[in-house]
Image (tube, rainbow, N blue to C red; front, side, top):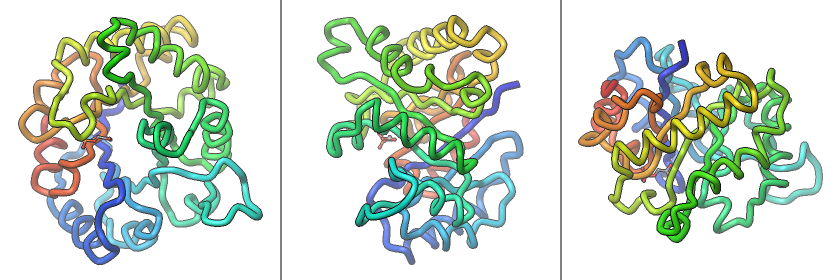
Amino acid sequence: MRKKVVAGNWKCNTTVAEGIALAKEVNDKVTAQDVVVVLGTPFTHITEVVKTVTNKAISVAAQNCAAEAKGAFTGEVSAAMVASTGAKYVILGHSERREYYGETSAILNKKLALALENNLTPIYCCGEALAIREAGTQNEYVINQLKETIFTLSVEDFKKIIIAYEPIWAIGTGKTATTEQAQEMHKAIRDAIAAQFGNEVAQETSILYGGSCNAQNAQELFANPDVDGGLIGGASLKAGDFNIIINAF
Ligand code: PGA
């Protein structure tokens, strides 16, 4: 059975003290047993949040890692450093990183390799911009993002990946994909995984939806057969809303 996952992406929000308070609130609220809960915190918070989280259902993620193992790369944080904090996951390929920081498939392949070498589970993001959706070529576009990156991994490594489909036009806009749009893309992704790695692997891969997923719409989105959870931005900053999403399966 593939895992149900709800991952929070705090982005560039909260001070360390605020982040600890938020993590503690989530830690105390979550009672779900069959959902993997992940808190994607800023780098500065990870060590403290790892210490704060005692609830076995909850793990911590970084939102990025360096494309180099170590060395003279001022300001970068390596996958080994992330792993040394006790974080177990790393979000890679978020559209904000692709768009604002020029992350290409080539860079993401280096990050994926380093994350996997350091036993971090990548939450790998993909998704199309509005113009691509309007042109009707979103499926090809997203599958191509996967072909250039995670589909080049060995089957052993691919099995460790969690995929997050995040249509860019839905991120932070309050405009969610309809359940039909989400299900259609998730099924297209799962079919592509089956073609690449076989049906058994495809059935075991968790594919999360992201983009204005919130306490009101999570249940409808998660009810889709190929939606295995969510990557949650804005709504993950409120422990109560985040917990409603965790309980939305
Ligand atoms: P949002 O962000 O939930 O605020 O739309 C999702 C994400 O970017 O991961």
